[in-house]
Amino acid sequence: MKNLKEVLKTQKMITKAMGLKGEIKPGDMTMKAREIFSPSRSTSTMKKKVLPRPHTKKGLAIRGLI
Image (cartoon, rainbow, N blue to C red; front, side, top):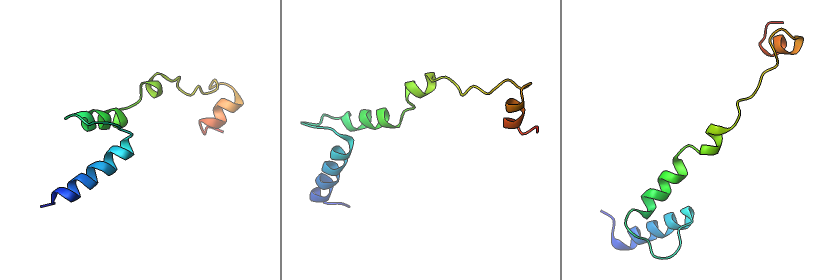
């Protein structure tokens, strides 16, 4: 088992790494971790990379058909 000193040290390092400041309430670290690890909405709404049309030379080359 870890003693209280080690637990407080670990908590302090984690809160510093997460950017949490001030008094920490129960669940704050969990919510911040979920926010960090969840897929960003901006990446899911970004446009997909558009390939050139397949009937052009560049489109065929990108698809590996030339």
